[in-house]
Image: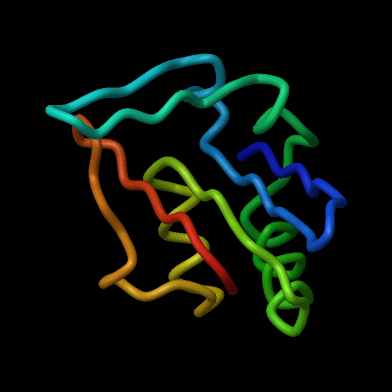
Length: 98
């Protein structure tokens, strides 16, 4: 997985399965572009991502999580719920506030 933390008025956590970086997915009116400049950060293991997500849980952060492994890891870290996940062309996506 690729993890990148953007510093803005609040932290933005970008997490995506590595194989999705640079691709665009669309289905009906839904579309998501997994842009390199936004999502490509550091390659992290599931264990590393879990720790970072749990640490960020207390922050006033937003997140953009794309891909099966990334979404499953965020669910395991309990920063998202299944209700907050959509699918675009079979790719799970979770966007919002922590």
